[in-house]
Length: 352
Image 1 (spheres, rainbow, N blue to C red):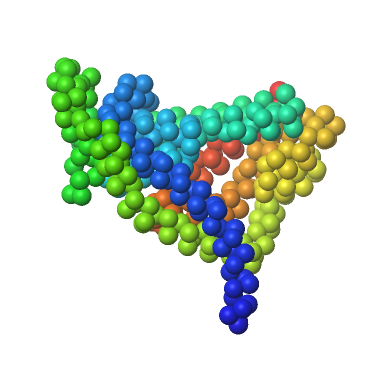
Image 2 (cartoon, one colour):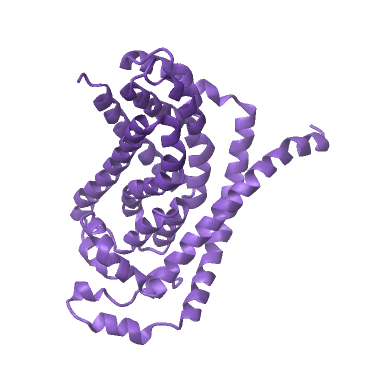
């Protein structure tokens, strides 16, 4: 291919990828920066007074609660925090996978206010809209509870877990773990820890400067990897037709007894949720009942995993974690979503 032809092929990809990578990079930077700020100002201990009811049953360090709270505002920032905790030694791989699983419901919450309430419910109508959002909320909550139970079972068998919840780890590079040298006074049963935090705390400007210095090296490592994977995936999407992935829906709709009209709805829904909702809305009441409509949209969600995982999850997760651990995160997320959506489908379509 001539150089001019290469430029013509690659330039549209760069135009598409650059804003997406820039936006994600900003949120990752915010997440990592806030993680270091939270530790520097002792906010982890304050947030832990609330989030410990979620993290401690799962045998996770209190810092995970900070990431969970952040996820409710920004999923990318929450993931950035978890990545920072993992790289600094505060979380190992198993703990990180459990934390990512527990994040699911809190990542869903933000979409209620940004998408479901202002966009999807008006399109679908109050009854179907609330039924669909309720089903998605129950699925997300079920996955989060599964994460808590996994932590309670898997991590309780490991030595030293209870100590790691309250006692910080140190890292050779002086990472985030070294900023929490004082134990949680609530855990030690006294006020000595709190006093030590006050006495040894850095000035606010120093805390912010240190947080910024720790954020930049991680961005230099994550963002180039993110950009490369996104560019490669976008090129493949432009080259190959991924819509054939929706062919899997036909035997599923027949098995579940859904109307034949569900196939085109699923095909649209798998690639664009808003367009899918607009497609099915006029057929509710005539072709679809509220339950079969919601089941069709949930089935579209299952089918869309094949597409969204390739187009979005792989670039994002590989950028955050790297290919090896990112593949584990994708596998766990996808498996749990399919299992819980399948359970929701069975409940929706069960004879009344």
